[in-house]
Amino acid sequence: MNINDYISFASANPVCYLATCEGDQPRVRTVLLFFADKTGFYFGTLSPKDMSKQLHLNPKVEVCFYNNPHNQAQAKQLRLTGTVEFVDDPKLIHRLHKERLDLDDISGRNLEPFSEIFKVSAGDVHFWSLSDVMNEENIEHLTF
Image (cartoon, rainbow, N blue to C red; front, side, top):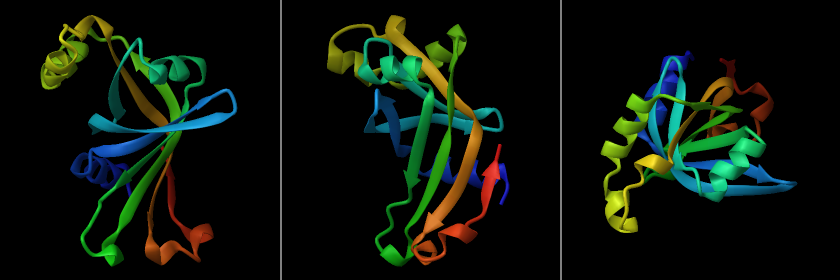
């Protein structure tokens, strides 16, 4: 496997689960991948949210992408473990905001001033499927 295999899988299955830590308590929520490329896996959040506060205090995360097939024998996960880096790029934040304008409608306000982008650009990534249940020690991992 190479990083492109992981980028393709994440891009095809952008709804994923992101785990943060608040003190010693894990916190998991569903998030939407903004995009992924060779520079990292990018996500958006809003600065007032608990997730943002947790990431600023402890940037270690794990993300799980899942392909959700009808046939469970084809189930596959991509697990990404790494450290978050916040991206201060006004053009990228504007692009994120434009792609998620429906959030403005839901909240009744312009959320662009609160928008943040973070990426996981270094860490460990691997696939997991049901055939790995009793073989986890032999799963191929990529450090990127």
